Image (tube, rainbow, N blue to C red):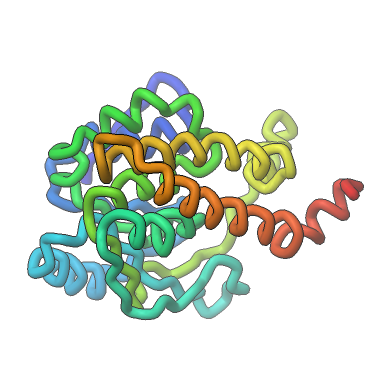
Length: 232
């Protein structure tokens, strides 16, 4: 195991960057604090990815531990999306929960995606991995799998009064609205990776999918939370 001591809290966006800056591995899988890796299935998945080098980013399924009420658990269908518009709109935009996502580091290096991500780090506060996966989907195939790579553990709640907003921040109306701008810019960069000359149709069609996603989150998934915050 390799542990990295940091001199400051760089938040999720900086921690995700460090995963790629400090690794010598061909693949990186990221876990949330409370979740547990399913090592046997992870090993089989790495073998699958080595036999399918066209796949640059891969999302496995998640099941809850026996004593845990499922919150983020999901069983995906096996599906591979072609790089470009198909992968961006069907995969890149949708993976809000990072646990169980595997990244191929060669893709990051070959297309300088780590550098692009680092340059725009300050704009991607709440869902930096979605931004990165949009970029990766532009240049490599993306895949979902039924394989359970992660077990969902009990939620860790920060009770520090100085950090009362740290968990709900990404679920607030303001942060959701920010995604219309931050990920819009990410889509623009991804479109330029597909074709050097900016192509309007893929960009606007992808942005339409992004708007549908966040309107659904605002008015459906997070509606109860917003009502509790007295937001009409």
